[in-house]
Image (cartoon, rainbow, N blue to C red; front, top):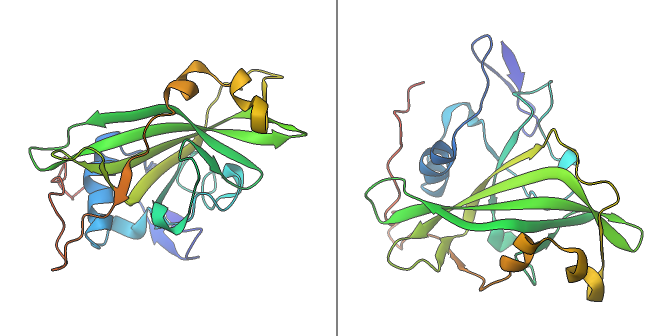
Length: 216
């Protein structure tokens, strides 16, 4: 089975019936760790991409023509400046945080993984309508300094099967918070300090070991 890499335009061979569906622990503890350490990952299945350059359905990859219905990307947040990380402009809309700072252990090392969940709101007239597109963002976080978060992240972006509530909209500017969900309001807290874990000698401070072996 040959699969097209939509970003580089090359193909690579995979076993028949292969479906790339890594767990949260594998995404953060293996793939993100390798990316931060500038190590190659198998088949380059996850590519660098600015996930905020456009609406989610126009990002490379995804769909039946590629690996599956999910899309996976690396992105360095330092290449974008946001006034509020909980409402991030992307194309004709915004990614809004709905679940924030879910930390989970990867190993006995000096970092843990932090997961944020965002939903995409599309601009509609003078407001925004919530779509059924969801983003999972994973970063590595220092155990000793939880406010220190890796600049590089790995993203899982997908469309949920259940459509969002019809007609549910949020007004722009002053009226936005009136129709935002309670989970979004609770997420508006202190912004973490985005850093990288690369030291002057080129090593990485405390990356987690892979949860599984590299062979698959």
